Image 1 (cartoon, rainbow, N blue to C red):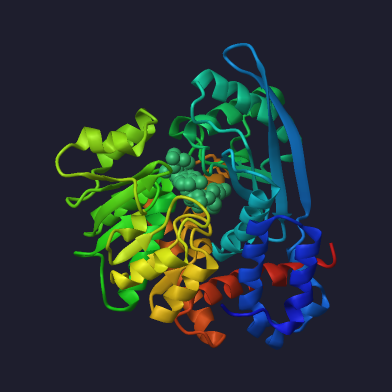
Image 2 (cartoon, protein in one colour):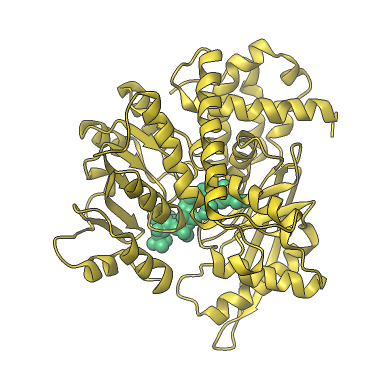
Length: 449
Ligand code: NDP
Ligand code: 2IT
């Protein structure tokens, strides 16, 4: 794995010292610092004005108690977080994750990634992330509603259309955003649509936001293919996860002529050689809130349910890890390479470990990092904010075309920046540098704040 430039080593040491025990945050910072070596050689002012040190320290971190009453009348306590990382480019923007694994280190890694991702979109949005260790799985709608109302009752002090605009992430979809927005509206007595994105279409949401992250990831891969004179036609694709990002990535791969032969959840994976049936997947996941085994049962036929090994054992041309961080390790990467993978693009945030990325680099596999490949979700959130601000709503076709354009421009900017800084074909370097420079220049202009 590559190393950190000596001019930046003390920045990284300081991050380790100030944020003990936050392994995912360290990993995310390290990856960006490794890419910035060639930038600080050309632009020493980023080091002199402590821009990089400042970018590694969140502007504000909020941790709060979330008490709620379950269906049996017992009091439950969860912990809520919002890390407002950087607002040089616009109001803080980023999702909320509800999952039992959530702690400060996860929220910080996601918030840090969000700064550069949001910058890459070219839209005026800063970076943030939040969430809770609450697990919506296994709770009734009424419990989820009471939890969301309690969560918003605290979070409300720190968000707003011009300050911080949350959205969904793992465990937070349309249902949760609805309960959160309802409570915000009730307490403020204002219909301030622009305070949250990912809203339903009848109450301020945007067309294509639900589909945007998965579709955007596939548009990004389509650009990578086109750059090499290829297309999705006839490609065998594996997508991990079966949530929001995975479902719509599968849908778009099929529209573009590829076949997704496997997907998963935390209980296992399914292999469907005829192509995953997206209608059945939606029925299982969006309607029944079921497990991946239910897909195999509903679909019938030759669908294989994999519980041993991993989804990365399934041979494919293109892999789209779209579940969670560090779900694809070095050994998985070796298997994928042995089975002939040519492109890996991250639908999830940081799903490939540094060891896996090194294996792909070594083997000449084209690799797209999440902060570029999955930026379509937050980009369409910014389009939702535009529609809310102008009290307008656009058609599906127009919004999807805007998304496709944004993904094209992110792809091209990453490729051109990688060339400019001496790493042709390296989308990680291109994304980190292009994302960083836009934020860093804004921070220089705004002074030491
Ligand atoms: P969902 O909650 O809709 O789906 C998450 C999927 O990943 C589920 O299939 C889930 O399985 C699986 N998963 C989650 N945690 C784990 C785990 N610890 N181990 C194994 N499987 C796991 O979330 P999204 O689809 O929205 O998010 C997926 C990824 O994409 C995340 O990394 C997220 O940060 C990222 N992302 C999301 C965006 C969005 O707009 N929603 C935008 C950009 C990135 P199970 O149900 O069994 O837990
Ligand atoms: O990781 C992400 O980019 C998201 N979860 C979406 C954030 C957003 O504000 O739409």
